[in-house]
Image (tube, rainbow, N blue to C red; front, side):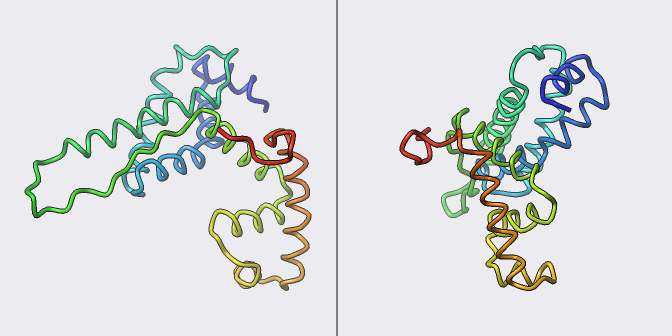
Length: 184
């Protein structure tokens, strides 16, 4: 289902539409929360709060607008709220270690680009997508991927090559006229 159909179902309060939004966005929203909060537990909480907020606010969503931008806006607000709550936590003494929580401003353009990359990876054939995810999301080498998937290293390299060619074609719109990543 395309984003416009999904947006319409979601805005109408359709539970299957919400389930589809959750399935499509839970990974990217969690990734953004981990980046902002630097703590997996807090990121899980922020992700849960984001989807609760999305469900509660579904009546305010205009289905003619970009669903991804709205989801990431709600998710960013949830992460900031979790950060602020943690910062307000119990009073600490000078000898206590402050929590390691940092909020970096994430631009809408960067969120949109991350969403585009995730979507392009999701559209790859499953065998190629697995190689790309292990290489880029988990930082594994070709040898480690081969061991993880039980494949010869040559197969991993050829799948990686094919996948990256497909991704380059699918994501070319994210490059400027010089072929460099656009500044955001």
